[in-house]
Length: 220
Ligand SMILES: Nc1ncnc2c1ncn2[C@@H]1O[C@H](COP(=O)(O)OP(=O)(O)OP(=O)(O)O)[C@@H](O)[C@H]1O
Ligand SMILES: [Mg+2]
Image 1 (cartoon, rainbow, N blue to C red):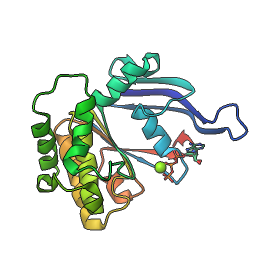
Image 2 (image 1 turned 90 degrees about the vertical axis):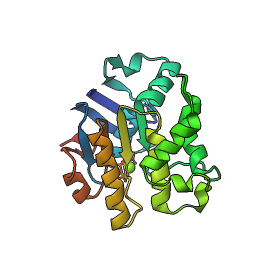
Image 3 (image 1 turned 180 degrees about the horizontal axis):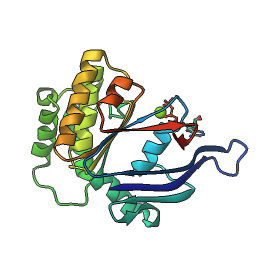
Image 4 (image 1 turned 30 degrees about the vertical axis):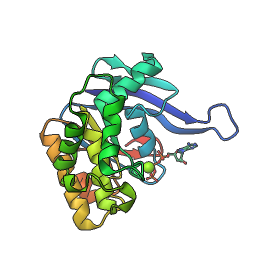
């Protein structure tokens, strides 16, 4: 489970452009939940998601994943937790554009500390589970938005993380593709994974178990 206790996030601390983006956010997310994070533009949704994904730091408060207090970790342990427990789907996909779909999905496996046999089969299986194993060899810059989103999801799930975090995963997609992508997240959730989705879309938020609303760096 995930526990946030009074998280304070300041961008550019002690500089002229200092900005406090989260003013003491506390929340708990249980294993197996599917949670939506909503709020206006600039409310701090991505900031919170990046902290949850262990890709950004914070100035005060405590973040606990399962029994691990995140702040006490070394860089190495931090990277390991990110690699093994968390699958992150970024808003802009963040794929290596001239790599193939398969090569993108292989990236987290090549960083993993665990001994993984049959990396290629595993990556293909992840692509299959999002319905695009037939596109494995295609370079990502030749894929459609929805297909790229699927590659990003396959890459996020290939290490079988407990937590899947997604920042506006349907922001750039048409209604039909968007419904298919949400269905994928629901299936991942039904398989027992905790899913946290940042979204502007009330329709998507309603399909989650719970909604966390952020406003100006506070939870409403
Ligand atoms: N690197 C940064 N340096 C300074 N300020 C930042 C930085 N990143 C974000 N901010 C500020 O922090 C606040 C929260 O930003 P954040 O990206 O978390 O918002 P958001 O809720 O994800 O918005 P959106 O819906 O537009 O994606 C905003 O006011 C933003 O300008
Ligand atoms: Mg954002």
